[in-house]
Image 1 (cartoon, helix red, strand yellow):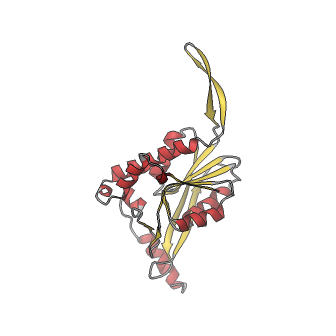
Image 2 (cartoon, rainbow, N blue to C red; image 1 turned 120 degrees about the vertical axis):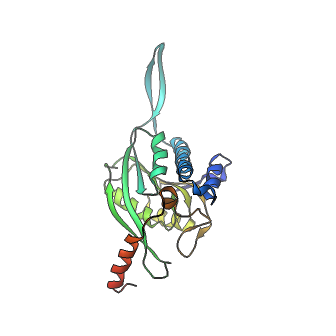
Image 3 (cartoon, one colour; image 1 turned 90 degrees about the vertical axis):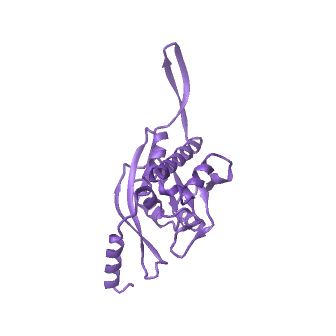
Length: 235
């Protein structure tokens, strides 16, 4: 299995990453979302070098030319909501791709907020059987959301190839994700950070990607979950 860390190369992606991490820069949601999208576009370009190509004859006003084009067998999937701008970056490059969406959220399952569970509630996807499946999720922390997404998406058929793509990953999340993937899969990271804190956020990371893209969310879902788990004697 290939693990690709693009931060090991000197590219403009590092500029976008430095801005995403900067607390002052994070105050502008539009700029933050735009950088997540741009990293998606550039990662999609790098990924495009690994795809299968077939020559097509194109007719110009002055003649014809054979051009190798990627097979149109791509499904781009993302985990709502943080994945939306990242997904858009991939779709800007692979504009012919089909699309899939998985709703999954993390929830703390103890009072100290040091243990995390993941719940997947909703999925909209075409068949991924025989397709090139790209799962674009900006943060690969515990790997729980990604594992849930992989399980849900592959229940709709066996893909020809799976690419897991993220902006920032923690080593722990990569290890969990590897357990869920076929050996010929590839994990793409704009950066791999040193690990997670007690609350299971990537360090140094850049914080909650969904909140930084779209604003802080109400914690009502988490509170409802906590209330139900307390009733059941879990907490």
